[in-house]
Amino acid sequence: MNAVKQPIKRSFVFFLVPDFTMIAFATALDPLRSANRMLGYEAYSWRLASLDGKPVRASNGVECAVDTSLEEERKKMSGPDRPSMAIVCSGLDVEKYYNKSVFAWLREEYNRGVAIGGLCTGAHILAAAGLLSNKRCAIHWENLPGFSEAFPKVNVFADLFEVDQNVYTCAGGTAALDMMLKLIGEDFDENVVNRVCEQVLTDRVRSPTDRQRLPLRARLGVQNSKVLTIIELMEANLSEPLSLIEIADHVDLSRRQIERLFRSEMGRSPARYYLEIRLDRARHLLIQSSMPVVEVAVACGFVSASHFSKCYRELYARSPQQERVDRKQLVAA
Image (cartoon, rainbow, N blue to C red; front, side):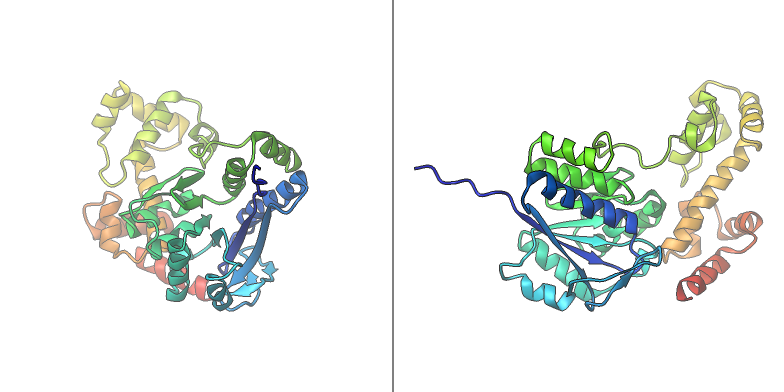
């Protein structure tokens, strides 16, 4: 006599970190609710947790009540209420978050076979917990520079989401929807995924490697393919900037032609534009990491801290040091 196949059931714990991103949280949770509705039974269950069991305020100011505390979750690890997956939901200023108890809980869950996830900037917390060494992960593009410097042993990508063994990470926003649809697709057939897509009004599940940001053409409003190729070269070579001669060789144009194109399309010289994108990366590193200013300068292709500071002050009307002071005051407020 054949054994009756048990229906798939999976439980989730969403651990909310202060200033978590609501859109990533919502687009991760709601596909589970829709899938239950399509399936006609509770295939997916979930609970929300916080450090102390108190409500957590999202980055948009909305407070979210939770079901359990970290202490309660630790007690559930060895019983029938142990989750199938624990997902960290974070957002702004994640680099400031440090809690040994949370890190230890995540490691213990992982070692017990629980899948671990990170939404938006959640990969930063997973990396700090030691769960991402030599693994692939995704994080929001805005946090990628600081993350790369802080965790050099992690293979981080500007993808929508990444799944490496039992660790799931996504870049946040609507990428959380794609990651959860993939997970639902692993549990059920394509028909269930398609029905959930129809419910949430999306026409497809995007590939993990789809781009996070708008294509350069749309983002910058530039149509000239040569200019776009040059900008891509610049963005790929920030720590060791290419000379204009090297760029000219890559795109088979003369220096004078490149100068004219940039004046026409970008309203500035190629050297000026290159400097601005290097300083933009530097600003992200100053805000997101504790790297010394001189190391930030080197990482962004400046030969000296003094030259870096001079250029930074000219563009942002404050020094790199003041940028950090202002940021700390803003976070404290």
